[in-house]
Length: 67
Image 1 (cartoon, rainbow, N blue to C red):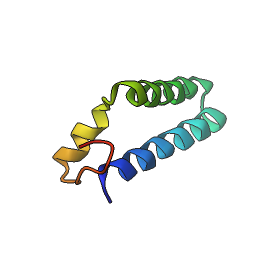
Image 2: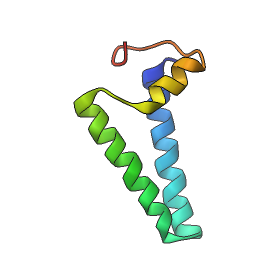
Image 3: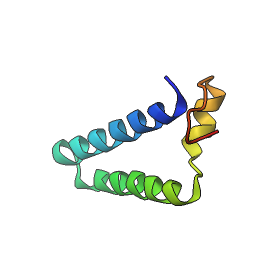
């Protein structure tokens, strides 16, 4: 798995988990969903994503978008 696919997988997991937590625990978890969405939006314009540094440190190889 490269960094590009890991970013998509982690973002999707965070969104699904926070929506489920907002349904079954507390609506304030939707703030986390909004944060993930805003981070994805800003990274599409700037190319900067903090998770990339974490995944590079974990040993994943860059894909096409994050070289």
